[in-house]
Image (cartoon, rainbow, N blue to C red; front, side):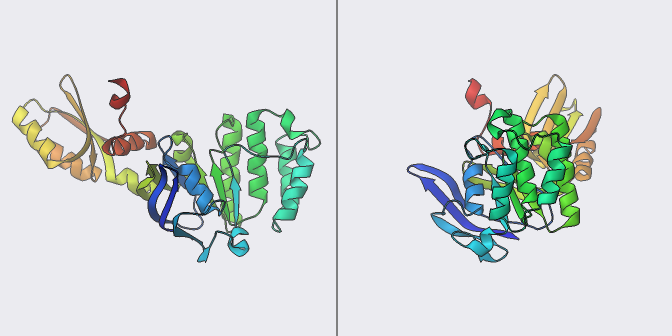
Length: 300
């Protein structure tokens, strides 16, 4: 398990991570999402032991991670811009990872590079940006560490490769003790693969919860209620995150169980009422709007 205890980090006058606490359970895919500049990369680097927090502690399986080789041996960190030695080819990076990570699975790596049709003798700098990220992911998976941290690693991969990587993650979780933590702006991709989500905004952790539980606790209500008094009564009875009116159609994003939200709507004698689940992108927009991150602030 990964435990974050009152984690804090600032760079000059920028408070990148603001007293974050939480945990990431083993054997699941954890997605880290957030607005631009929310502190996702800084948080991942602290969890990996790359940078020291100003305050608080990161524990990997009960061990502090910073400057602790025993804890660091459990993690592999893939940055948003993969670094390779100048002029290195795939074989050379494979051999380097094999020296750094005692658990590196060379046989699996060679098999995967063949399946992905990657020329092992070709200089990595000659590959496209997406292919360089693909190589980074294969190195990270084959490192054999218990935890794999991916900072925007999926960005730039084509749909076929993304699907293949998801399948590789699923296979690793089934076959060994493996927990990937993925930071990405591609919420559609995370929605397909993640079991749990953490949402960062301005350095603060707004929520961390299983994705299924999040989707059960927030929903979208669409209804038509001609009687103004009844409509206002419904609005007062709900925990509303977002409200839109288009003609007679009222659309509300609310906290609460879908069945209970629908019951409250039907009690106001609507002409029409239905409750819809939200996508992860809609949840992100609703939660960050509550925190003050609203598109209207940019447009007006």
